[in-house]
Length: 395
Image 1 (cartoon, one colour):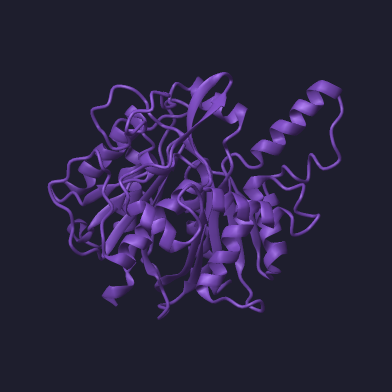
Image 2: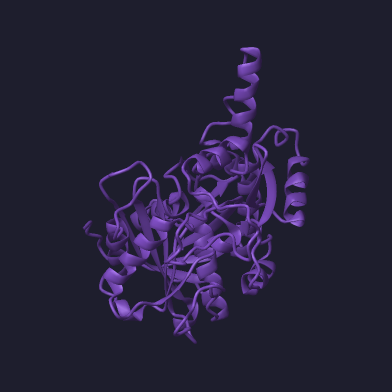
């Protein structure tokens, strides 16, 4: 297991923002989390009715307005615009002014999906490619346009580590802050995957939810399910990280963990998710396992993925398993943005001191107070990340 020295200092999360099927304001998002209903709608893809979680009407209008702000933004993919919108809100939440120098690490699993598919189809039909096809579909497009929009002065980093992309951005941000090379960092992920080819890829893997319009099409955290029930959502989520204990901290990062396990299949993790066992133990460090009050699972709604993560939790926590929750049943899998949306849920639970349950899961115990929460994410190839958060009420 990788050995991590104890964090040299507390890392404060001073701002966090998202745009998704949950909405755009923290009040609206929390209200939807407290509701037992999901955010699923259905759209035709390839002649088949398909469950998806798209932006709310209000959120979509915000993106349209953003696109119309400048002719430079007209040609950008939704994934870039989602990121710009969330970044603006995040720094506003943190109280960062225009003169503050900060780094940016934004990632995406798929990148500019809609534009890439559009330009590739254009090439297949005409044999030529549009002038903007390359600059508007490169992976670095998201972080560079956020930096342009915010006029930041720090480093700009882009990466893609599939579904753990956003939490890997957190790892990078923490590393920069711990090194002393930066005092503040903007980290997160953005994804706009509701496109024909992306949906077709997930269906080809036989992991997509059916279109039966049952009460809960995605059965994330239902361990005994017999078929895969994952579906896709869109959105972006970004957090502002600051070195040290800040009085305006929404929550504090007390531990980070990461691990990758040997590949047995391109998309699989082991039966007991060795990568999650290692990442959670690493995030815990010297903190006793029974001090963790809750875990926000990656749990995408697949048969093997959900159960493997649960097996890993059992292996790490034994008889002291914390309260478990996930948001995938409600908002779908947002790929590279999903880890930060998980982290946002954890921060909101810590702020409101209320645990959000999964409605079709039976709970023996629901915690009355929340002090420490672990947030998980994993991507294709078993690259897991775990972040240990602590409430600002405990300091």
